[in-house]
Image (cartoon, rainbow, N blue to C red; front, side):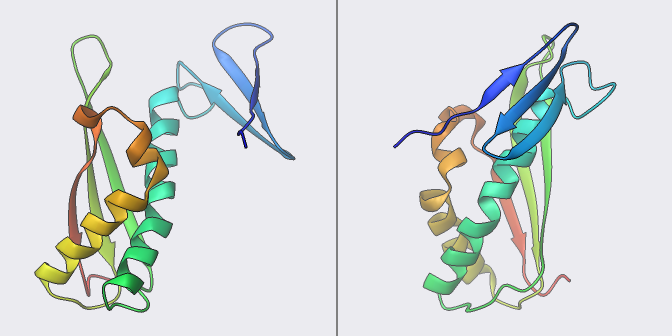
Length: 131
Protein backbone atom coordinates (compact mmCIF):
# COMPACT_ATOMS: atom_id res chain seq x y z
CA UNK A 1 0.00 0.00 0.00
CA UNK A 2 1.17 3.51 -0.73
CA UNK A 3 -0.02 7.02 0.09
CA UNK A 4 -0.27 9.35 -2.87
CA UNK A 5 -0.45 13.14 -3.01
CA UNK A 6 -0.26 15.34 -6.09
CA UNK A 7 1.30 18.76 -5.55
CA UNK A 8 0.79 21.43 -8.22
CA UNK A 9 2.34 24.88 -8.43
CA UNK A 10 1.39 27.03 -11.41
CA UNK A 11 3.74 29.84 -10.36
CA UNK A 12 5.35 31.39 -7.33
CA UNK A 13 5.80 29.56 -4.03
CA UNK A 14 2.25 28.40 -3.33
CA UNK A 15 1.19 24.81 -4.04
CA UNK A 16 -2.12 23.04 -4.17
CA UNK A 17 -2.07 19.52 -2.81
CA UNK A 18 -4.58 16.98 -4.04
CA UNK A 19 -5.06 14.30 -1.40
CA UNK A 20 -7.74 11.78 -2.43
CA UNK A 21 -10.89 13.95 -2.73
CA UNK A 22 -9.40 16.78 -0.64
CA UNK A 23 -7.42 19.83 -1.60
CA UNK A 24 -5.13 21.89 0.60
CA UNK A 25 -2.90 24.84 -0.09
CA UNK A 26 0.56 25.42 1.33
CA UNK A 27 2.48 28.63 0.65
CA UNK A 28 6.21 28.49 1.33
CA UNK A 29 6.15 32.23 2.08
CA UNK A 30 3.23 31.91 4.51
CA UNK A 31 1.46 34.86 2.89
CA UNK A 32 -1.59 33.12 1.39
CA UNK A 33 -1.74 29.89 3.38
CA UNK A 34 0.20 28.02 6.08
CA UNK A 35 3.86 27.64 5.22
CA UNK A 36 5.57 24.28 4.80
CA UNK A 37 6.88 24.05 8.37
CA UNK A 38 3.51 25.06 9.83
CA UNK A 39 1.92 22.32 7.72
CA UNK A 40 4.47 19.82 9.05
CA UNK A 41 3.77 20.85 12.66
CA UNK A 42 0.02 20.56 12.06
CA UNK A 43 0.40 17.10 10.49
CA UNK A 44 2.64 15.93 13.35
CA UNK A 45 0.25 17.19 16.05
CA UNK A 46 -2.81 15.88 14.16
CA UNK A 47 -1.20 12.44 13.95
CA UNK A 48 -0.28 12.60 17.64
CA UNK A 49 -3.88 13.13 18.81
CA UNK A 50 -5.15 9.63 17.89
CA UNK A 51 -1.86 8.14 19.14
CA UNK A 52 -2.51 9.83 22.50
CA UNK A 53 -6.09 8.60 22.61
CA UNK A 54 -5.10 4.99 21.91
CA UNK A 55 -2.12 5.30 24.25
CA UNK A 56 -4.46 6.57 26.95
CA UNK A 57 -6.87 3.69 26.46
CA UNK A 58 -4.00 1.22 26.62
CA UNK A 59 -2.66 2.84 29.79
CA UNK A 60 -5.92 2.95 31.74
CA UNK A 61 -7.39 6.32 30.72
CA UNK A 62 -10.38 5.31 28.63
CA UNK A 63 -11.25 8.80 27.39
CA UNK A 64 -8.87 11.75 27.35
CA UNK A 65 -11.76 14.06 26.51
CA UNK A 66 -10.74 17.30 24.85
CA UNK A 67 -7.08 17.32 23.80
CA UNK A 68 -5.11 20.41 22.77
CA UNK A 69 -1.56 20.33 21.45
CA UNK A 70 0.44 23.54 21.25
CA UNK A 71 3.13 22.67 18.72
CA UNK A 72 6.20 24.91 18.57
CA UNK A 73 8.96 24.59 16.01
CA UNK A 74 12.15 26.48 16.79
CA UNK A 75 14.13 27.55 13.73
CA UNK A 76 17.88 27.75 13.27
CA UNK A 77 19.74 30.57 11.50
CA UNK A 78 18.89 28.99 8.12
CA UNK A 79 15.14 29.00 8.95
CA UNK A 80 15.12 25.20 9.19
CA UNK A 81 13.55 23.30 12.05
CA UNK A 82 15.97 22.87 14.90
CA UNK A 83 13.55 21.50 17.48
CA UNK A 84 9.89 20.74 18.04
CA UNK A 85 7.96 20.84 21.30
CA UNK A 86 4.41 19.78 22.11
CA UNK A 87 2.54 21.25 25.06
CA UNK A 88 -0.27 18.73 25.44
CA UNK A 89 -3.34 19.47 27.54
CA UNK A 90 -6.05 16.91 28.19
CA UNK A 91 -9.42 17.17 29.86
CA UNK A 92 -9.15 13.81 31.64
CA UNK A 93 -7.40 13.72 35.00
CA UNK A 94 -4.40 11.44 35.51
CA UNK A 95 -1.13 11.51 37.43
CA UNK A 96 2.27 12.42 35.97
CA UNK A 97 3.42 8.79 35.79
CA UNK A 98 0.37 7.80 33.77
CA UNK A 99 0.91 10.83 31.52
CA UNK A 100 4.48 9.73 30.81
CA UNK A 101 3.29 6.20 30.03
CA UNK A 102 0.68 7.62 27.63
CA UNK A 103 3.36 9.70 25.87
CA UNK A 104 5.72 6.71 25.60
CA UNK A 105 2.98 4.65 23.96
CA UNK A 106 1.87 7.52 21.70
CA UNK A 107 5.48 7.87 20.51
CA UNK A 108 5.37 4.22 19.43
CA UNK A 109 2.04 4.69 17.62
CA UNK A 110 2.41 8.06 15.85
CA UNK A 111 3.41 7.54 12.22
CA UNK A 112 4.67 11.10 11.74
CA UNK A 113 6.79 10.82 14.90
CA UNK A 114 8.31 7.71 13.35
CA UNK A 115 8.89 9.47 10.00
CA UNK A 116 10.76 12.56 11.21
CA UNK A 117 14.46 12.32 11.98
CA UNK A 118 15.09 11.53 15.66
CA UNK A 119 16.67 14.90 16.47
CA UNK A 120 13.37 16.52 15.44
CA UNK A 121 11.14 14.32 17.59
CA UNK A 122 8.97 16.63 19.64
CA UNK A 123 9.75 17.16 23.30
CA UNK A 124 6.44 16.48 25.01
CA UNK A 125 4.78 17.64 28.19
CA UNK A 126 1.25 16.59 29.16
CA UNK A 127 -1.13 18.10 31.67
CA UNK A 128 -4.18 16.08 32.68
CA UNK A 129 -7.28 17.79 34.04
CA UNK A 130 -6.22 20.97 32.26
CA UNK A 131 -9.36 21.57 30.21
